[in-house]
Length: 172
Figure 1 (tube, rainbow, N blue to C red):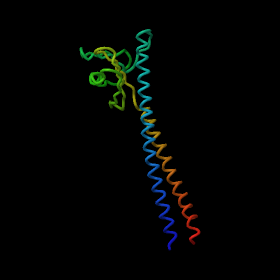
Figure 2: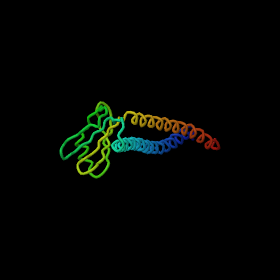
Figure 3: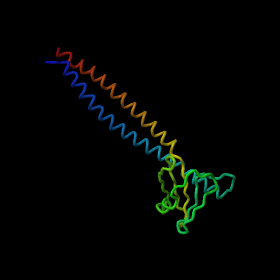
Figure 4: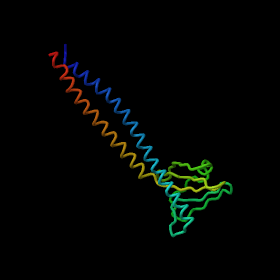
């Protein structure tokens, strides 16, 4: 009986089974962390939109960037005075947002997310933020999860090699 071959087979089998489990957990962790980071972008938009409402109540010198009032009935839009680095499809987003808050991702010289809040009847507030910092966080998290998964699989291969050798020792 060739114990060296049996040791290799046991090592490969154990490592393969563990690799499948680790990869599944890594994919789930990656998706969960991506969802959490995207939700933080949505929360940032909500905060900015809330700041615009407060500014309307208590005027100050602050002018929001990438923000528009949109009226879908009159098909008019008005920027709120800050710098606008993008021009999202305001009416398409507004028409898709009746009844609440919605978020839309779009690409215009880079990735962006627009938050739309339905104010009253045909009036909407649309704000946009750059997604680059959030995408950078997502990519960093995916790299860390991938490297940790590879490390776990390599370590499991080494441990399984040692355990297979020790378990086959009495057969010698």
